[in-house]
Length: 313
Image 1 (cartoon, rainbow, N blue to C red):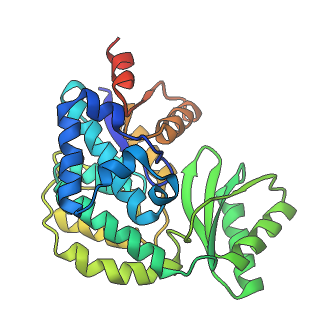
Image 2: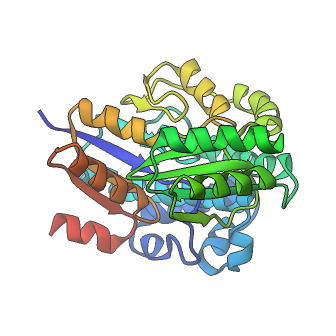
């Protein structure tokens, strides 16, 4: 029997105007914005709708904005969509997944991801760290290139996101990231793209953020989810509340193992992937990885009323 997974995007999917059409069309979505403003004590809804873009791009704002848009989509359309057998989220999207599965309250989650964004930003001064996407190279080659760059520079650079479909993101000290890029180019790497981020997320340089967030996360009430979550840091199916909490703590300096998550979901029989929130990145990856695995699957994104209209025909 075919199964369904709901997927939730991470940082990078934000844009000024996000959620506006959804809030105008769906009272349940508008209520999420009102809850966000009350929980945070400032007008996140106005920032999402009107910007400015530079303010929205600040990590402490981006993370709650994306969580909020995803939750708006779930509250507006969740009853009309196939129920998930699994949920998974990319980086901060893991919080969205836990809210969707009823394991964590939205108010707790939105406050926590704002604090997470602040902690991740201050962990490394601007300019000290960097992230680069490496396209079209095998994971083993990227790992070897990072290891060589660490020895050469005495600095940190590691794979941070194993996104699949030929994309691995590396992160660490700027000097080491640049060294790894040179090494990988010499090994045949042809396509690399520096990411417009202000900190080296999901690398050991995020240990101060983990230290800051651990007591914050330990104060939150977690419940058993309505369906299993496949977590970032282990790419394993988890349902126990304390394991869910531990995964959020360890993912801050840990790599996002998205390709492994998708491989597991395909092996579990998932053939319908629904991305809820802004953007279409995860549904695109799901489509490509399904094809590579020889699995006939449907992958779609639901972030606007128009997306839902197309789905229901």
